Image (tube, rainbow, N blue to C red; front, side, top):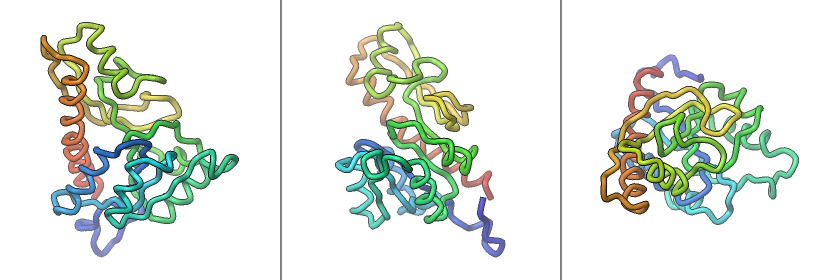
Amino acid sequence: MPQDPQNSRHRKLRLGALASGGGTNLQAIIDTCKLGKLNAEVCVVISNNSRSRSLQRAHDEGIPAYHLSTVTHPNSLDEEICRTLEMHNVDFVLLAGYMRLLGPITLAHYHNRVLNSHPALLPKFGGKGMYGSHVHQAVLDAGESVTGVTIHYVDEQYDHGPTLAQCKVPVLPDDTLDTLEERVKERERRFWIETLSSLSCTSR
């Protein structure tokens, strides 16, 4: 990872975010960085969805933002994502609701530096098709008393890489899909900050 030998103790982690949807986790990270409560900065946002709220959030914050997808780069998407992240000197890549698998070029270049959050305690309720409300409904259907959030390193499979950190969230007896989903989302936003804070300390 690039280091500034003169200021390695104080240098901010440079974060690149990939997102497909609303970007509430992304906004929480941006806000915490702006407040100086996290020694990091979001320096680029990439979305495969040209209409995503995540791109608008980045534009609103003055963060470079790119729509990169199989539409814009049908034969070279992986290369372009990696090139864009490199161009902005990214240290860690965050998948903040990104709905695609990353390609081998990006995964190799950022080996053990790509993080994803999943709204359950992996390896339970993970894999292709298990995202958002699908996850929370599966938790309720299984009669679980505890769910949570997993932040893990990303590999070539959905929700499969080594776990970096987990936290638990109770499933209450009267929970509906909406109440459980909101409770987990709120905890997920805070857990991203907690995990990145620990990471910024250990990465010095």
